[in-house]
Length: 189
Image 1 (cartoon, rainbow, N blue to C red):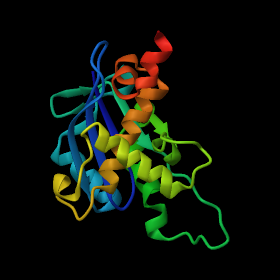
Image 2 (cartoon, rainbow, N blue to C red; image 1 turned 90 degrees about the vertical axis):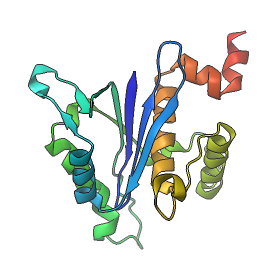
Image 3 (cartoon, rainbow, N blue to C red; image 1 turned 30 degrees about the vertical axis):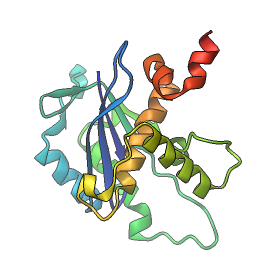
């Protein structure tokens, strides 16, 4: 099976991944690019990413790949007195509009931003949870760098990768759980 995970924003991160009935999560390809909503639209055209006739139940395609799972980070407003609605702060919402406008909406498995930080206790500060998540990717030899994606950093590609893994955790995809989370093997014994 093939999945596509998108971390939305001014910089977009995209992770194409595979998984199967006996095969754990594996990164196939990563992209990270700027341009917000327009950047995503341009990427979709360049990579031939589109939804078929959704009224007929057609799948999403990325080139010749049929996408079985589409995971997208959901825009979440952060109400704070010091938070100002800027173009940058709401660009994720515009990116969602591109996806919905291209008939991807019914296929999307929405992910809350915090879902990618599944390592460590929920009470840990965000900075520590980010560090643990990145260490998790390094441990499994799937930590991208800016050089990997041709950008100054790979922050959004990292988030897209973490959202893909978090999605498979939520779905209790056992090959991924057994391969990446040793405590799963202990629970089965």
